[in-house]
Image 1 (cartoon, rainbow, N blue to C red):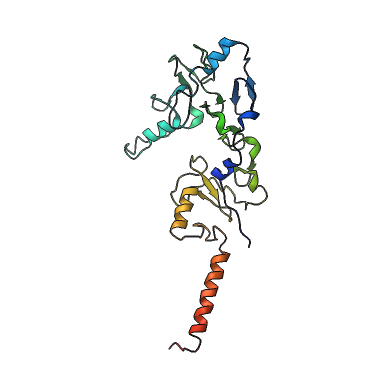
Image 2: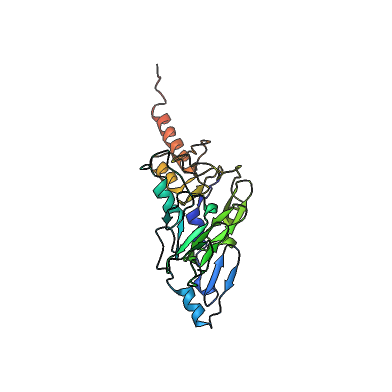
Length: 267
């Protein structure tokens, strides 16, 4: 079998860098499906839209709102901040929990502090709380260079640009179009835990690689495997990369040994 190119999420995104010059000029509101233009000639509207842009948020998102978790009624910058706080090993096992994205109901404007139902524009000060907004995932993000889009088949938002990805119904996930006719389909390939670290891959924020056999694994876990000279898929034992050169070197070494000890008899 010829060499199979491993395609990671990070590599996929490298093919989908945002071209700022190609974006519509003037402020825009992005959601999971469409872009709504704001009239740039209205200075008040423009100022409200831009106010606080990229100045608020956390390590996960740049956004102008915080969330109230319905599960514990506490306020966090985002659901990932909630999950890191409430589902860590420091928390009693009986009290650990996560916040499903679709259950979010209330947000707090970072500029005026008004608590309100999930929406993109603050009902009090009129600021845009997230340049990208998905009503389904309750996702806010001012950093639209990620090229976010909502995949209805996945049921969640992805990054990298809708035009650069396709949804494989058998694998159950969005893959780069580079893999459209070259990847091996595995039923629910992304709906499993990483075979190395056991994190659920479908919603993982870490880069994921699709192996030639079709199984999936975290890119960092795959790299660590290779550093320890492990080149077989942990699930099916097929090679994770082209091993033909390695086999050729091994055959050459064995041939040399055969010539050196050809006249010797092992008893």
